[in-house]
Image 1: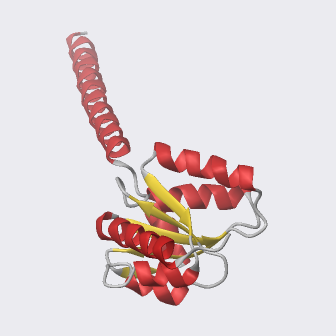
Image 2: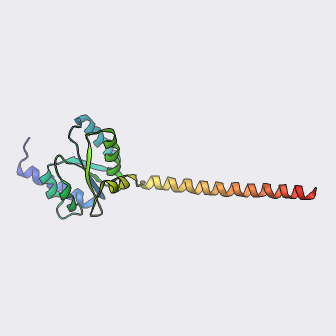
Image 3: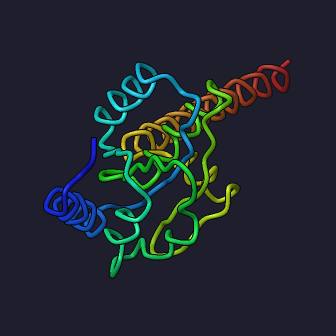
Length: 170
């Protein structure tokens, strides 16, 4: 289905608007992946606040112009599937990383965070960033472990003191 000029302008405008508010963007080559599989990926993305689209490269290049994702133009080649993380910067990277591990044909081609192009290593690090909720849970666990450790240490010290008192009186 060919797009007329008006539809192309709408697509470019939507990409530009999303690019202005997104935290990060990850691109991938999706060729060889079945449509149903891509639809499941999109569904998973919506659940974690990731906006995804398959866009013509020229329209994507025009859409990211004058945004923090403009450096992405260098990475746009072939079939481009782009994911914008809207709530957590690592959401799109995590989603694409997990998906690429399950689907050999799905290749991550680039990413941008804070106006900087990311290497594949940096994309993996971004994917490993804990979400706000995960960070809070980890912090609570650390506090619990440290307080339990102090309790155990105190109980052990009391036990040693009682043993010392008993052995010194006999």
